[in-house]
Amino acid sequence: MSIEKIVEQALQDGYLTPSMEAEVGRICNTASELSIEEYMALDHLMGTLLTGEVVVLPRKQFINVMEELVLSEAIARVAEIEATTDKTPDVGEIAAYALNRLPSLYATTEEGAQFQRSKAKEELQSSISKAVDEAIEQNINPQPEERISFGQAGVPSQLSTLLNSYAKDFEGKPQDIE
Image (cartoon, helix red, strand yellow):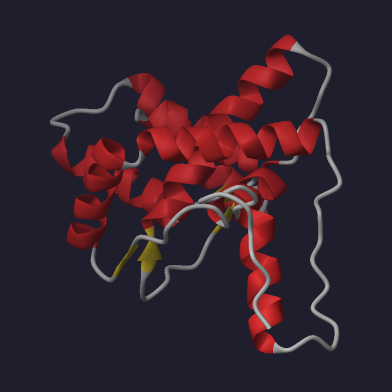
């Protein structure tokens, strides 16, 4: 991602993530010379950081790479929707919905995070896209979810109810456990 795109994203979101900050640093460290546009974008970013228009998210001692991947996918998809319709989906709700349906991918170092990113892009990109699609659909056209109340029933009955709600016709007709 270019410096200009990172700055544009930070201005749109109102925050600069640690990964965005790291990418700007990487570009600055590896480039022999920055373009005038890159300098102007960095200057604009500095101004917005000083005024508080953009805030820097604190670094964590660990990184959930899945959060970054889902958030990036959700932001891109929401931008497409907003450009083509009059709908304004909630990025936070979409990301949370999708993250609740995907595995976490934690890392404690940038090298570990990079490994998790590349692994996730190879193995989980379709799952990420599908979860974000479902989240957007739920956000735009909310359907009341079937909620399960566990009341006073025993644990085996509660577990059976939960499993039956998620796998209604798995291996034939569900059986009650008492």
